[in-house]
Each structure stands twice: as C-alpha cells, then as structure tokens.
Length: 222
Image (cartoon, rainbow, N blue to C red; front, side, top):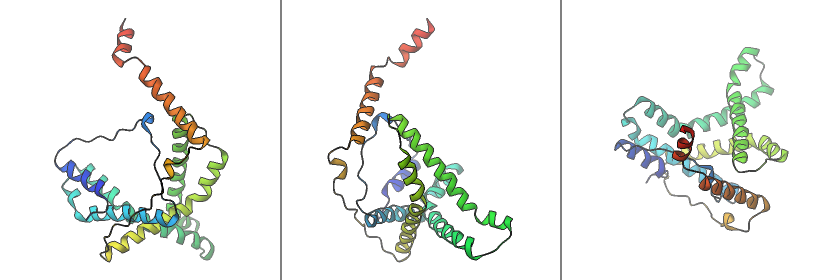
C-alpha cells in the first residue's frame, strides 16, 4: 500500500502518455480543515512524507520519457529526505555558531542552508501578500511576527516528521495513521472568514459578468 496515492497515480498517468495540467484560480478557493493538534499534524506530515518515499523507491518515475520530468520527480519525491537532513543541519549549524571557531569563509559556506531557508521565508511572505491581495484581505503586523517567530520551529517539526517517515519506511511500518477530524472548517465563520468569503464572491461575480474574450477582441478590432 502506498501512503501517498496522489503522487503515485500522477506518475502512472504520465507513463500512459496522458497530458496533465495544474490549474489554479483565485475564484475557486475553499476552506480546508487542518489537523487540530501538533501530534496530529506530525502524523499527517509523516504519512505524506512516507508516501513520497514509497513512490520514490518504486522507481516508476525512472520510466518518464524526458530528463526534466525525471529530475523533477526525483526532487519532489526525495524532498522529505532532503528536508530531514536540512532540519538536522540547521540545528547543528546554530549550535556550531556558539561552540566552534572557524574561518569566516568556512562559516559562510557552512551556513548556506540557513541562507536558503531565509530566501524561502521571504518567498512565503511574498506569497502571503499575493494571496491576501487576490482575496481582498490585508495581513497585519502580527501575522508577519508570528510567521517570523514560528518559521524555524515549523521547519524542525517538518524535519522531525520526515525523519519519522524514513524510520517507519526502514522498519517496514506501512499502516495508515489516520488524522483526527473535528470539522473546524464547518464551524461558525469568524469576521475574517466572512470578509474572505465576501471578497471571493465579489470576484466571482465580477468574472462571470465580464464579456467573453472574443467580444473584447472584436471591439478592439473595430
């Protein structure tokens, strides 16, 4: 049993020669339920990471026709292992800042993963502003502060889940760890959620009331 069926099915469909596209539209964003506790979140991430590792070990991605496809599959499926190593490395890097004395150039090189994480954090901030702008929302300074303070701990949690997934795979443990669901996304809406829904509905109405592309082209040609 593969714990990450989406990746496995996607690769098998590609091997059949079917053309696939990933499409995102701001008008069709839905509320999704997240795990209710840290323990449940780790179980969920462990399951996802182990599913990627299982699909990687199956090796069907090696039959993809193009080199770019194979490299992308290798990176995507192997990312849980990379994430585990980087998580441990960042922790060791922070400790070495206080207990080791090395030349400046070597220190810069050893801290390279930390710079990558900093760039990733900046991309997350950009993504936050793009998402909120698309839905008529505005992030507060508290949101940015929480993201900054929680970023590294969050990465360590992900790394722990990846290590846990690797350990389960090595030990041959393949049972499905169910994630608890409490229906949080179906509860009464907060003012922020109501604002989000109203902005999304307004965008959808605006899009449906716009003239078709052909009509725009025709008016321009005249």
